Length: 144
Image (cartoon, rainbow, N blue to C red):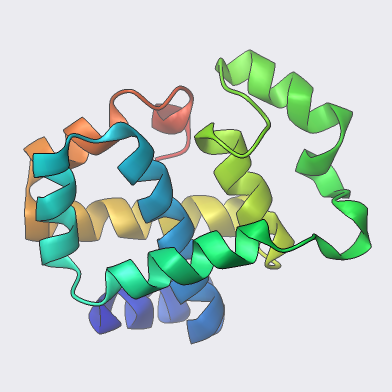
């Protein structure tokens, strides 16, 4: 997982802590949708990712600073979510994007992180595990 974090830091231009948080958010999204076998393959390909997932979950349980505004936090988030067939709450792609935005990532940066995670998973866990984790997430194909 350290290689993935280093790649994200280099390509996206964010710090390692933010990269780790974004990976945790994405993997939590995958966990909500993937089979247990695919999730085991993903976690096996990323030693240490479970702690990043736990940190991301704990951070998302904390109250948002500033009242949860931002591009995805208000009505625009709901409209975009509807257009993607997703929800703007804590589940789904819009929830993941909102969490990443709360940690300072732009939508473009979140997309870049998602692409890096997908590439890493594809290479280390296989295409089938990636497809299983992503196929039932509405709107994800438009971001990866």
